[in-house]
Length: 208
Image 1 (cartoon, rainbow, N blue to C red):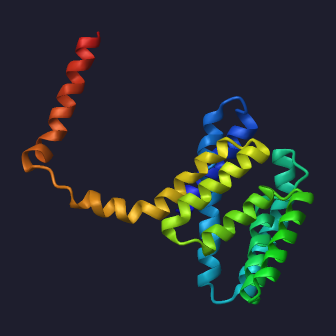
Image 2: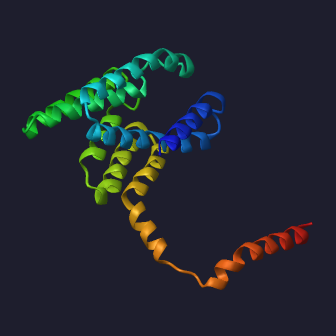
Image 3: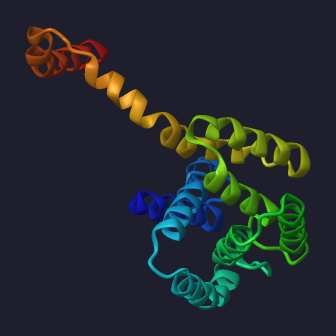
């Protein structure tokens, strides 16, 4: 997952910088942020020291800011700052039992992230909250609803592609188990490799 997150982020940035007219780069890149959010939430829940976890994020955020601004010609805060803000909110929510205080903290943080132009803004915070608190069977619905909201607010149509990781997280184990239960006849399994090669060879001869 970590390799996929890094690779899709790299593809996104390469497309943004060198091929801004080719949308496919950005579509692939939409996969990256949910993967980082998932890793963030998992790391926050499993780390032995949340203070050190936040410190490491803060250090990466600081070290990334100038390269981020230089490479992407942006004056906003980089995405690691967004992730760090999400962790700070999660830690605050863990210490509060009041729904109204929790709502106030989330609302205030969302406003700050929008006003100070954090990468992904309040969307990033809400996605972190969804991945932390929403059950797996409702993850796709909540993520889709969030994306739909930001399509109307910001016109982020491409962000709909970010649903792909959530679909895998929510339904992947079930789908895999069902696929594993499917068995094909032994002769189909054994003959597939040579037969599909033969078919491709015939099609090439026919084509030319």
